Length: 458
Image (tube, rainbow, N blue to C red):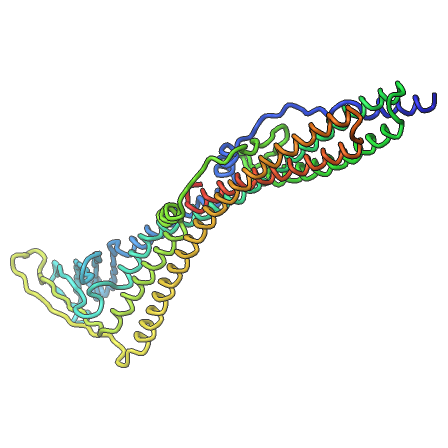
């Protein structure tokens, strides 16, 4: 009676497979889109285009018309001692020679005014143009800043795409880790259910005297071992679910959880083929790292061109039509001017030119290095696709053979030609094969994701 009581207690405690709660499936694409829309890292990167727009507007502001006005008046005994007004409007132009158009008006009357500032009572006006004739013909600091600012939106877009691609790659890899852990839990559940059903079967046989009591103890031990494996797999799956939730945010900036959801099942078959050359060409056309490197090259060349301009003397000429009486514009004169402002030894200019030349060479070397890295990423992704496909095929065959051996061992056990230990070992081999299959399927899924990242199509 004591033996039967023990068997009954074991049956009541261990019989019955684990139940799973119905959960909604969070697909990879839906997950990545949520990450892209609401993740704070990308929402912060969204400000880059606005900053680029502000820099362009600031550079354009250097070509805004500039208005200068001054007025000074002094009175003595009711008459003008000094009545002086000066006003000008200057407009720099973004074109060859960097000309500046200037319109001016001045009126100076009074008893104590400087003779050089004295004008007719209506005042005098002038309309002229000034431009450099040596340094600054092709570019100057004003035009160079505008050219660099015009590249800033492309740089901002490339930087945003770079941060986006890297974030989605990290999130996607974590997603498939989660899916792999979930599949491992399913394997543990399956193996535990097999052991629990066999426990019920053997316990009943032992109660009927058709099997030794020690067999029921052995299968109970196997059940506990598989329970432990299931708890270990479940812990990993729950931790990865938390890690995945780190990437998910609500639109109001609050964290989002993955409770009540499960990842997409791992792909069962390998269905993607791609050539290394095709992948490398696509990567060179789409990867934002290359576009960013190209912008840096263009920026460095602009600075180099500006440095070369400083190696020539700065000579500016000015010509203007002048009316000494603004009420008689038909009677005009002209004035000419020449200004020279240049250090004689050109040491600062030559240093700037040398530095700019080095910067150009560095940008070119960086571009070559990035191209090599992008090619390597694409080739490695293709290799990963090929090898993971081969591994998945091998693991599928291994599982098929392991199932065959378990079925054969089960038949021998029922016929009394095998032991429970041998059957348990066969099932353990099957569990190991299933876990290797899960790993192969996960590697295939991650390889596809890496190919999308490597080719800039994620």
